[in-house]
Image 1 (cartoon, rainbow, N blue to C red):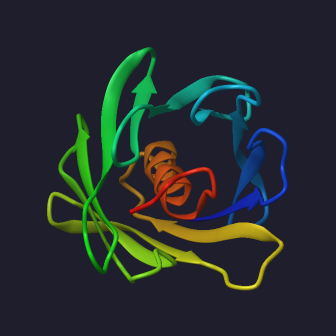
Image 2: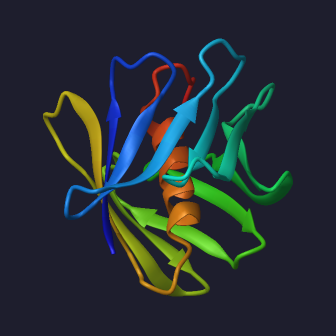
Length: 162
């Protein structure tokens, strides 16, 4: 399934809606406005929290934990690298890696050696806009949580990315 993630560049609190490829609302993302570090929640359209994303502070490289029902289900850490962004991802859902270009504009999410998502960021947009193609047998909300974390690490001006 294809999703469009359009995050407003000048939004107040990282609140946005994720739409499917037909323009229908599919998920709601809400961020905490006055918090130390990024804290975002992904909801379904009924208002049920699906995932909670929290940035871990006091780290040399950016690190995020993704929670479901109060339990940590994934940790995403940016690794030191000279050219391409690299991430270490621990998850209860499988072994994930990210493969992509130098700028983090186009990348693939690989699970257990198989591509499960293709992500492409649009250039010259008033919003951070991603097209995300996700394999039908994957948890869409979880894959989108990974995409949000990667965007926060690579493109959020509040980080000191190395």
